[in-house]
Structures are given as structure tokens and as C-alpha cells.
Length: 68
Image 1 (cartoon, rainbow, N blue to C red):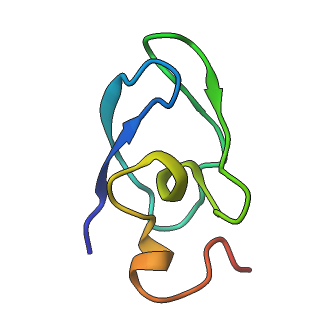
Image 2: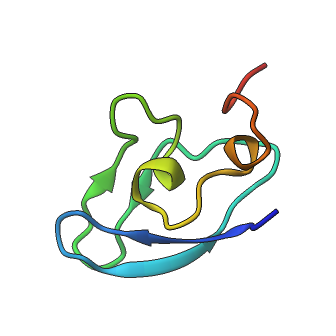
């Protein structure tokens, strides 16, 4: 399982590699460059699935994201 995902800001194209948690979802992410608050796109479960180059760990495992 890959835990590093590079998030690309859709507004300014700034890229930052982040480490994904295996036990929680990340619904919000503030771009360090332009300060826009990223939220998942409709149909996506988290910011990594919407803006990352690697999807979140539950999706990598074939599970539903953030399922309790």
C-alpha cells in the first residue's frame, strides 16, 4: 500500500506530497501556496481521491472510504 500522495492544487497547481493516514479520512486540505481550502469533488471520499496522485488507503484496498 502506498501512503504518500502528491496533492496538486486545482487553482494554482502547487504540489505537495503528504502522508495519508490509514485510520482516518482527510476531508479538507489548505493549499500552502494560495491558501484555498480543498474539499473532495462530488463522488470522491477525500481530498487524496480528488487531488492526489495516489488514492486513499481504503480505496487502494478495494474498500469503501471512511466506512464505519
